[in-house]
Image 1 (tube, one colour):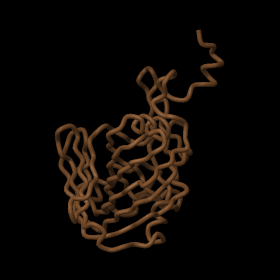
Image 2: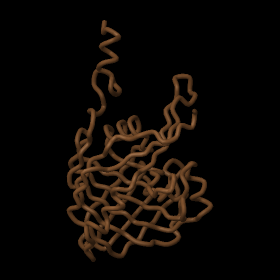
Image 3: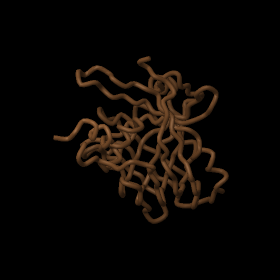
Image 4: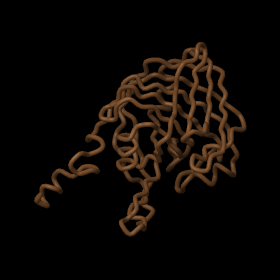
Length: 246
């Protein structure tokens, strides 16, 4: 029998004897982003942003991210929507939806920070002269993004502020009786960011309705910009900035 004190000392994540992911910090090498910023319907956006966060504009960032080398999480691809928000006068980004193809970062992201991760099949690759990102939920295509490959270089100084801005998450964990045990607004930051390259170019984004991957609930009204970034980053642990159950 395992002594209760030993359980308390060793417990980190599920399962107890073989956690799905190791303790951090979590370092990502050659993380590759394609981020398309678009204008959406203001009324639809207002239904997605939890207070006390505020969305100053009806803007969404659709992200495709390749992570070939990440501590403990391995090699995987991710896609989702981030909404530019403001909290206590400071700008940041609220992660509204995330879809990825690897269990450890799904488990770790949800349990540690509260990232809204679901299992899906995103891709990000170069097709001749075009960066192409796709997101399939099961057998259904729900997002397709294209961007001209390295059309115009950007300086590290131009993209670094967006990388260093805080991120916000709505962390929800139920009790064993089905009621909500944790409901918190979490803030996190990236650290030790090294920009290895950044570019912009023409872009397009197409979203399709899906009952369980409702990215099209924030429709694309106008594509505003696109950026392609390669960087090394550390995903720092977070802090609770608002407790909805207090």
